[in-house]
Each structure stands twice: as C-alpha cells, then as structure tokens.
Length: 309
Image 1: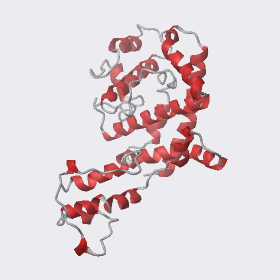
Image 2 (image 1 turned 60 degrees about the horizontal axis):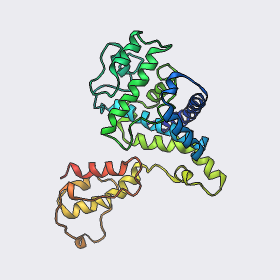
Image 3 (image 1 turned 60 degrees about the vertical axis):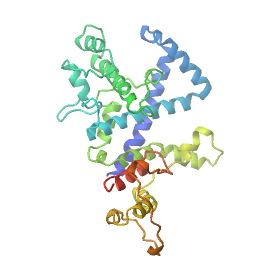
Image 4 (image 1 turned 90 degrees about the vertical axis):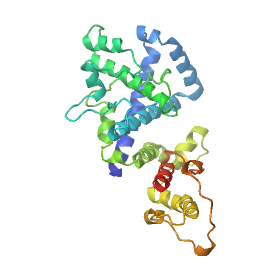
C-alpha cells in the first residue's frame, strides 16, 4: 500500500472539499432560484445549524461527511461490493465517466436505485433544460445511490434529505472533479486492503491534528477527536487480538492450528496452567474492539477465528 500517495490524496482532498463546500454554502445562502426556493425548509435548518455550530465547524462537518461517503463508495466499487452490481463513482475500463452515469446515458438505471428515473432521463435527453446535463443527472444518481445504501449501512449512508445534499460540490464529472480525485487517489490495489480506510481517516485529519497539537490549548468538544484519534497499525491490531481472542480460542480448541497464523502470539510461560474452556460457537463469543474507528480490529478478529470454527 502506497501510504505516501494516500496521505497526499487525503490532505489535498480535504482542502479542496472545504473550499468547494464553503463556495456552495455561500451560493445557497445568497442565491434566489426556483430550485433553492423548493428547498426552503432545508435552508432554514442550514441557517439554524450555522448559527449554532459556527461557519467553520459546519463546513468541516459537511466536507468530512462527503469524504466518508465518496471513499466508501470507491472502496466498494474496487472490491465489487456494490449491491446494485454497478460502480457508483468509478468508471469502467477505458471509460472516464462513472459507470453509473454511463449506464444511465445508455438508458439503463438500476431498478433499486432511489431516484426519479424519468427526471434523470429527461435531463440526459434534453427534455429538461440544463447547462451541464450529465453533471446534473449524475448528482441525482449519486444521491440516489447513497440513499439506496442507507438500508444496508445506516451508520454511514444516512438518508440524504438534509442540507448536505445542497452543499455537495458542483463539479462531479470533469477531470478536475472531487470524484476523479477519489478514484485516482485510491488505487484498486490499495482498496484490496481494508486498512486503506483507516489510513485515509488518519491522513484526512492529520493537518488539523497538527494544528490542534501545536496550539497547546484547551480543546473544544468537537476538536477532541481530530486531536487524539490515530489509526491503529496492523501489527498492533494483530498483537492485541492474537493474545486475547486468539488465546481464548486456543483455550477452547487446544488442537487448533490457529497459532500457525498468529505472527504476534506469545506462548504462555506455563502452558500447563492454561485453563480449558468449554467450546463456544463463533456467534456466541463477545469481543470488544477497544479502538473502534474503522473496525480493523473487529475485521481481523473475525478472520482469525472464522475459518477455524
């Protein structure tokens, strides 16, 4: 995994997202268009949160929300995990536009996608006026894809019926778009390792982390996370899990070959004193991830025991 490239990508993307979300915020608050008048209730909520949270915090929160969504979509694309069986942000080989948009331009929109199919086709076919029909259509498709994933990942893809949709950057399909940055910044080979998500989170907040640490001040509640959270490296994940869950599993299954796969397992000094436990099924074991962020400890813990159950 090219962590240097991931770091440059995450930091540059954060800066770009913050600027683009800020620009959208200024537009939404200042413009008077028919489309925005239809979103009056959302804009009212936006203004309320803006007064409560402050401009900087609101922009930071929305930018981070979209970063999370886009990198998750890219990861799922690269791993073939999309339930719609179509890449949402990634293009097909030899193509430039996202596969989802390419399919829509060919007249095919997945039935399960939560979007007004006719509205999308009217935009693409020119029946609805638009200065950039492909971009406008893709915006609807992208939001629809996020909403479709809500039923599966409600903790990440909550329904986009709030102002985060209004603050989604304008440019989504050009060579300079945030979507293109995500696809190019997350190489397919890097996405084969689940740790890529943890590294991206750490690198995304690394500049803010440095700023907060250097400030040497009392942190506000919203600053505690960026100031203190770090990604747990793989070797630490394995060390903690091998010598807790791994040991527990061996006490239930003394003849298990699990030790052959645990690189950081430490043999107890007195093997004769190891207790024998009544075997449990994998589903009956309770395991706590003490550093739960991207869930890498949970993922390794499952893999460590699942194939030995």
